[in-house]
Length: 231
Image 1 (cartoon, rainbow, N blue to C red):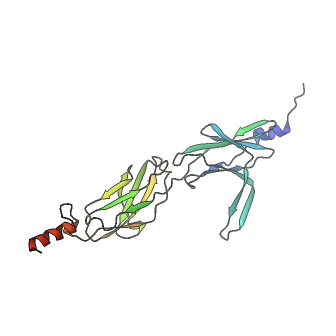
Image 2 (image 1 turned 180 degrees about the vertical axis):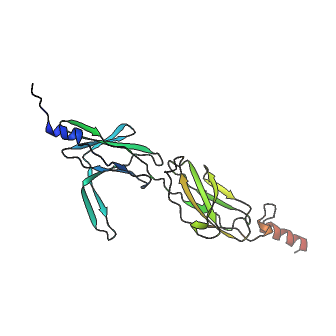
C-alpha cells in the first residue's frame, strides 16, 4: 500500500530547533532563552526542568551595537522567563510545533537569574574600635560575602566575612581610621552571584574615654564637676 507522508510534519519532526542558549546570571529580572527559528513551526513549547512553562510563537531577537543602532536577527527567537527564582539554576529546552504535531526536543542549556546586589551601610564615628555593617536581605541568596580595604580598590580588598546574617560587627580596629567595604550576595551554586556593591565608607572615632561603655555621659560628667567645685 502507498504511504502518505505529511511534508510539513516531516520538517517539524526532523528539522528541530537547535542552538538553544539560556542566560546564566546575566539579568536580575529574567532568564533570557534564545534559539534558532524552525521553518514551518507556529509555536514553541518552553520547558524548564521538564515542565512546560509557556507556549509562544517567540519574539525576534534584537541587539544593539556600540553606537546604539538596532540589529535584527530574524533567524533567532527569544523568550523571557520572569518567573524564575533568583539564584536557582534551571535547565531549559524548547519544542517546535504546528497544526500537524510536535517536533523534536531541542538541546538543553542551564540558566539562572542574577541575584540582586545588597545595599550596604556602615557606621560613621560611632565607635572608636569597631564599625557596624548592615544590609538588606536578597531573594534567593543563601550567603553574603563582605570585603574590606583601607582604600576603595577592589584589587586590594580582602574577605572580611561570609555570613547568612544581615548585620556584622567589624571589631579590633584602629581609632580615627577609615575603612572601605563592598558586599556580594551568593548561592550555593557558584554561577549564581550578584554584582559587587559600590564601596561604602565606615569610620572609627578618635580614642575618647567619653565613648567608652563605662564612661559617664557628658552631661553627667559636667554635673559632677559643677557639684565638686561648689558652683
